[in-house]
Image 1 (cartoon, one colour):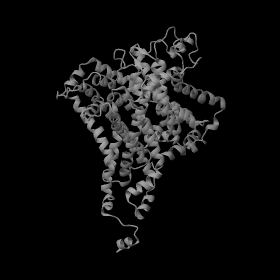
Image 2: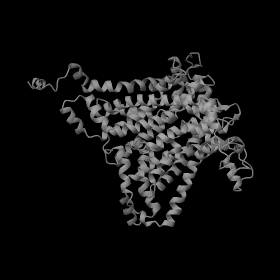
Image 3: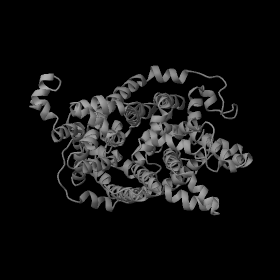
Image 4: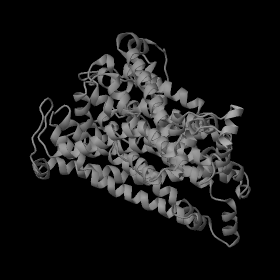
Length: 300
Length: 315
């Protein structure tokens, strides 16, 4: 693959405007395309709708389907949101998740850019093998690492602190980001770097002044992807953190909002909604980058 | 003389240290240090440590002694473990088949000429970017025994007489979890396959149509072979992450009712962290590795095939 990831996502769109689409008539398209697509959309989005509806419903409506139409809210209330924001540690969870996700992402991007540059551009002896090993590292799932990591984290005295997560999250971020950045660096012409070399730039100067500015879309893709992955991470945060105020949003919502057998569905849904919103908003700003990193990593 | 000449112009004076750092091999090593240090410490070492812990009787707060294969022998005689292996294989197989069937269908739909395509694509990825645990909580509520909206809808349509106990009966619970997993997995499969579909040149379809191929033949003999390389990679990732799934199960059923939805990852967690038997948990986690290796190898051969198909040399 010589094109860039962005190119790959963008070029085919020009091509699909041709083809044989004109052969299908409108009624036919409604039956074979639009209806199934609408069904998919409804099914994929319904849980979010239900989350939002439940969040703003008062309890008497929530548990009485006979007297109320369950799909609509008659008298919206902010009681559940208020409970979430002021009666739980939700703000602290949010702050923890932000801190961990941002620091882990920066750490991972820093390490990945250097590693990808070395593998792709400096082409040291064994670079190909290292590249393959990094790809293999991406295939090691957290589910088989969390037990030994828990003992390590405990031994290092990091148990129940943000550092436990900041240091362990890069294990699944670095392989992905490195792989993505390697694809980007590959797409940048060698000639630019050769020019800079002739002009007397050092290799680090080339990386900083020539290659990186050209790879900004790749950096954004990798950053967004790494951020959402860190935000969504669950098993490490569950295993390494014990006190409520140090938890991340996913773990906090699941473990702290359920009291015994009493499920406060309103508050739980509020937690789910407000835990999803930050990442959904961020995603909505960078959809194209996100899609290109997702598909680029798979196609590489 | 040339260096002196350059020196006189003043533009290219380099200190020996800079020269040393600019050496390709020195710089390579320096550049690899951060990534290598993090990955070796927090990935390679724990991977080995996990295998080692599987051979010990480590408990929380107490270092373990080497006990050989004892953990594995006791797991071999443990009915729950075999039930969990069965659950995991069932969950992975059914969820993967459904995800790929529906995901490929959605990708084919999206590959048509559609208005607002970019927005559609963005909306479709939502289930995948929202934290799994949080959407799992929404499913938990949707599957509630008393106030399930699904049961309500089915009852209104006259399809059922009484509310379905989604999470209370073993097979219902399994089906519910698979449905939630498929819901979350479809967008990933669909968007990746869509990217693959968009690289197929329309002229291939036109040529096939001119030769008299029906739409099924065009799908079978043009789309499928062209999509195969990316399909095999996405499949590997999907199988890998479904097999080691933890979040959905932990959030919705925690393995219940009576272990019928436990997967290997959740059982390992339950025995190791709340149960305190780190050694046994590590043994269960290690038992997943053979399956992961099989999945990885298929990915490797998928990559090989891709290069061959594109006429690139294997580098």
